[in-house]
Length: 112
Length: 116
Image 1 (spheres, chains in turn yellow, red):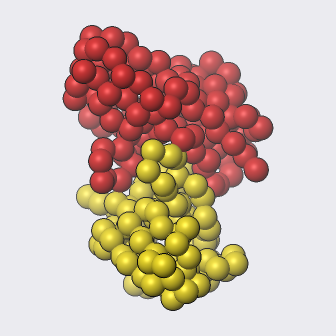
Image 2: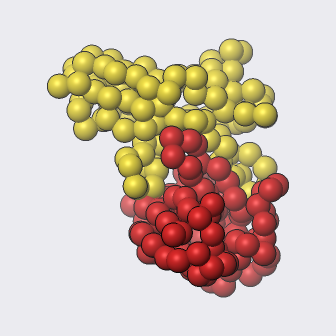
Image 3: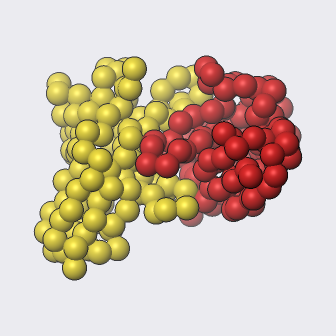
């Protein structure tokens, strides 16, 4: 059972426009969510997170929105830049060790 | 910021070889480290949770005798792929969390393992 889902494997956006990456989850016990960015042959880099007690968290060009009733979160990047091109994973910690469960990732391509 | 170092970044070796991968937290102490595996165009799959001073906890389907984990100090965890075969070829990534258990986890840059 995939508890964290990213249904869009890829997304292309023009430079300067908004990128919206979506993530759905099934486990209502998740209380914290993270977005990571990953380049090929590198480890994921933490971008932004949100606690389940909030519905929005903003950090510069990155904003994460959480809709608990819909079990949905999204990452907005505005304005998008070519350097943002990467695979984006959403993740949620659970279990006694707070290990992360990852979505399948979305390849974002920002076109110049 | 917090940094996790993973070494080596790339390994190419013959079938039957055992390969050790190191994961170090450079500027924080990590009671818990995690080992993930990523197949091409797929997500990161948790293999095991490594706890300093105790046995690792393996996810279902991961052979503990195949993937030996040692977490002897608060800054170092090692993963040894024993008697590696071509099907073990993959991208292995470690992550670490500080002793307070704070998120986010910080990741190493991964190890590309290729077994011929």
